[in-house]
Length: 528
Image 1: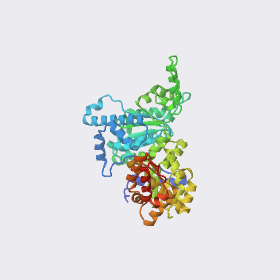
Image 2: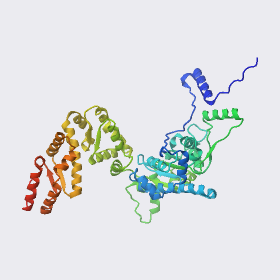
Image 3: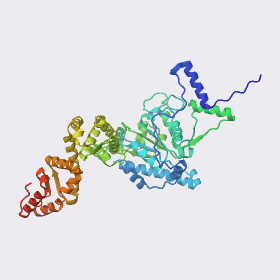
Image 4: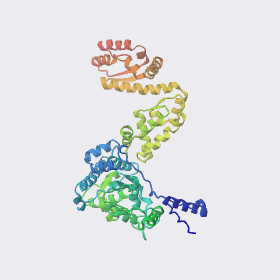
């Protein structure tokens, strides 16, 4: 009897059979990895409009025509400070993608000599290096991959292969090789792969990684099937079984932009040593207090002495230096950055039906606390999580629908939370104080006259708002409608431009204003 031919299993069926075999023989101690997604942290920041497919994205990339000033203006919306870094990156991005566009329009340019604008970024943690690159990738619309350099080793040794970064770009581009070839690869902590001067033997995680990156940064073809990936090799075997040959899909790195970064903690000592030598004997003043000033003067020679191969440094012509963030920078990030963490907390509390209001002094206090963390902008998230954790836990499902983040809350969060839960009057006053400060700011802008609301006046105005069911801001607008003209007369007659609003004023606003005006004509200071 002739035996029926056995059906050739699919790749997925073969993977399942192998996985089941390993489970039966070795239990859960050995598992088959069916897909390798690269090494280290990877992030994709391709966020075009949902209607854009890959073809539209590629067209958008090839038509990129922004100027460096326009790119920097876009970065300014998201990244506070780092002015020199934003300028340098804007120029590098424009040069790179303008070159790609020109090569597509004139293929002969592809054969011309061109030094790719790969970037070496220097700066401490939390200063916005990753955010800058992620934002640029989003602007251009290209795939973006980030990884940690310490996860890689020389090809053939234990550890990740840097070629996996390029394969990851293809994954992020949904397998579209043409789109992936325009992507950005960002490798952080590259200072950790510098070769120590006293190393003995083969340095597979230092010099070896540099040499592998060197090939990628220039131009090479990367095999999309990793020789160390079981799933890729299994797929190749299945393809050979079906077709009798194995195709070798590759991607060229000519147009992939490589950006590497690190803290380079000891680099400043090398720069200082070189600066001292160049000025010694010439009467130059080499004493500077700010290490950032020295770092900004780093040249290729310093990076080579730090432990990089000269060829590696040569493939990174754009050097960008990011400085440590000050309290003022952190405050500006909270206030003006489109990616401010404050927006996230506003949305989080709004989901519980709670409105959170951030006063200027509250934001300043958060910035000061974050600066003490010494982790740059990351400290803002750390501080906010610590401040608001218990508020998120306790306030939902209570009758608290609004609270104000001021300096008191930043300094004593537990005490403020306890009073919010126990004392409705405290809630009313804190919110009322903020609303009336907004009214006073508007009044000052319109009249150049300063109003200060006493605590008893705040209580009285809040009571009136509750009693009438009106918004507190509207109550103040109605009550002090005539004060804009009346106090302007007083200031003209007496020169006084600051007034305290007490409960007596709230109880009799028209009468008090009349007294102040009458007294101003007799050249007497208002008494209220």
